[in-house]
Length: 443
Image (tube, rainbow, N blue to C red):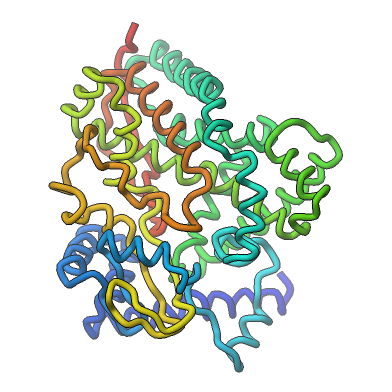
């Protein structure tokens, strides 16, 4: 790596991760609740994190802090997500030396939290990007994919069944062998990625997932940046291939529409394509893994689904509520405003704890209880809200319903084994490993 390139990377790490995390650790020692939440999350101390979030919910609708305001109640999180007075992301440098340093050190590759990513822009750019994507991500178009999703799930389960037939005591990792492969194959087919590249896409997406987190150690930061750079180069080549060999896949249609109408420039199109691809499987991997774990740990809820299979769509909503694939998101106020009745100054960082909001007792009775028949489960905020509501929500719901129902019905005696491991990512919430014995398949 050239000296100036390494210097820019080091500067990015110091300004975006090392310094903010140092400030937060000092503030946490001083009793700042927001800082304590971040540092507990960064340390992987889930027990302390849940206790802090419960304390924040008891504190009120919005908890002001030294660096940010923390929202854990359903009403305050939803207001942040829908307010016209906030924008996505956290406050950046506001002029002077800090802004010049940020501009000098800016990454040359795509990043999910930096423009032109859909996660990092607001209207009018956000409207322009989203208008292009909503042409093909309609509920009707997604539902038309159901037979293919069912076929992919059945094929993966056939492979698992064959392994179990050869060795009844075989231990499989359901994340690696099922939860990850199903959404990767689905989104890859939608976007025209050939089968021989599926494993590479999964590897790059998984390696880049911590890019959403604050306070990365140097080694992890460099690994993430390398993965983002590799993904940037790969998506460039994939788009070039589709331009030379157009087909009827979603990505090819997006390319034609954008090129013919000039909706997006090349960088914008590349950023949008990369985000759709990565977001199209990363969160669904978590949804499937979290759902399998919850159903395994609550056999009475599995029995309820056996008795009434029409509950499967609602069961997916309850999984999304209780163990959401995206646990938190950040916003910044664009003006002096009021959120949940609390005065907020311009450029205030707002941390919306989606996972905590989904446990708000003012909205959900007995919120810690897993109930596949919960009548208002769909009121969760797992797909965000407002103008940044998840574009792929319908596809995620479909894959969740098909994927969870298929594995449960094929392997009703599936048993998770000791050794399940949670992902270390903090924005994305899921499982790294789910070791299991499949048991005899249903006939």
